[in-house]
Amino acid sequence: MTVVARPEDFDDTEILVQVGEEVDHLDLLAKWFRGLDDPVRLGILEQLQSGEKNVEQLCAALGMKQPRISSHLACLRWCRFVFTRREGQRVYYRLADSNVSAVLDLAHASVAKNGARVFSCTRA
View (cartoon, rainbow, N blue to C red):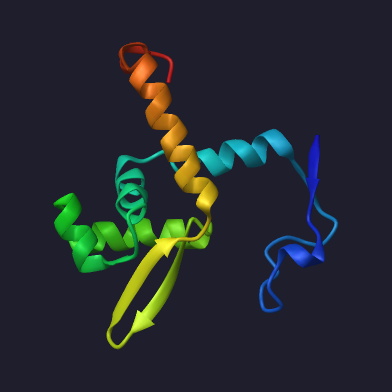
């Protein structure tokens, strides 16, 4: 199965792929999951499940420095896992897609059942 880029998939100001370009569905899905394939990005997304937060709040919650959090936020923002809102000097982040929260909830449920197996997997 392939995914075909359509004009309505893009804002007027951005052209990321050519309209009509075909992308393998499984490759695109794997790339989507790679966006979640980092403990820092998952931590950010989990923090944002409870509502929007600024970088300082995320740093405090995750115990990490601002450059590291900001780097991961840039990735999450590019892939539209998160949206931003500016208020004065501060930028607030929130989940852009409720499906991300649902995926995290499903992953937690699966890990609750299969966590020991996942932890001991040498192939992942």
